[in-house]
Length: 144
Image (tube, rainbow, N blue to C red; front, side, top):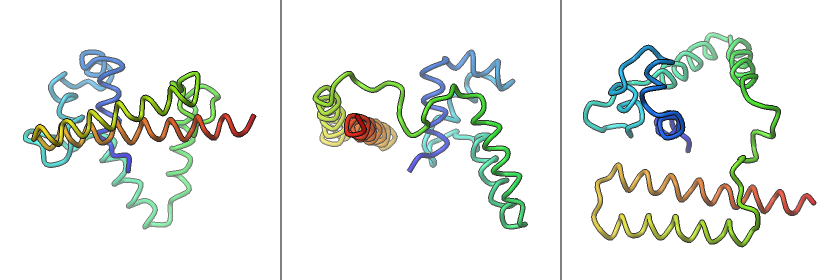
């Protein structure tokens, strides 16, 4: 399941902590902690988690409509692409499957090496995301 810290970790890799710090009016260190899995030392409750909690409470109060409107507003920031299809697909199905093997092997190596739980969790998330991209590529090719 996608968690808010996955978002922050991906955003941090794409934009760098310093840029995120400027966008969010927080220090780079706070941005770093947003991208840590739950239970990590120094981790803060991030804005996405808070928004999620707000949406839950609004839905309980019968105002899921404004939550859906807010989601549509956020989605309007994205280019007109199918949100179910990742933009970084490999050119062939074979290349996607090979990337799956590499991601799963990295996860297995982290487990066998006794890596810290947050590292193993990251590797698992990356392997799952890689497999999701393979599924998207498969669906894309079947639709042709």
